[in-house]
Length: 238
Image (cartoon, rainbow, N blue to C red; front, side, top):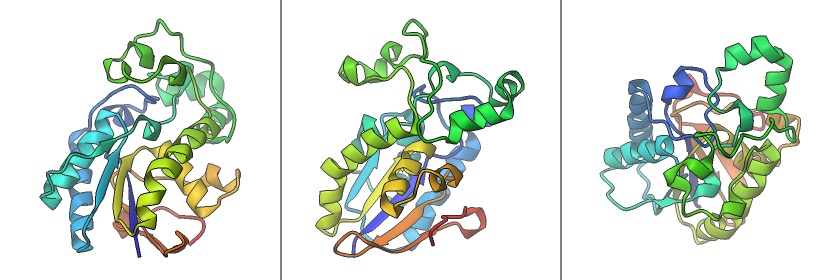
């Protein structure tokens, strides 16, 4: 029975500042590092062998995974995949969420954050926060780099990658940890739990709290739970 463990990165600097982060590379706060270390401790307590570690291309996910692996005393190189990146927030990137609620209205910001197929205005390609201007993404084909994304867009790239590079390993009974982001994990949960477009809008993913998903040989979910019960969120389906 394979185990899939999904971890949203620990609190980031821009999480703390309530800014739309998207594809911008920001690091973890001290609290975020602590959350990552605790994630490692919870995973260690499961006493299972992890066969593969995956992360997005983004520093906060990479460093969360590094702290998890340090806790597990595992020095293997993780697999880094840009399709696991956070959703691109377009022209909202870098802006404060509370200030934008005052400017555009809380309903509009909630629509941008939680709707299925609504996307913010595109981010100018001259903006320093645009992925085209960030060194991390220089090796990604230009046509793959978005100017803005909806959750639907994020879902399509995440699930394409899951189907091509992760699913086959689970079918081989391998145990996997994925360190990613609120929206890329929401996208994966939509697929795994078969959530409709309304339910996915309600799904909250806490930072630095491993979600353990136990699967059968057909990759049907047998059980799932957050390892830190105190900080767990409603999974809507279990």
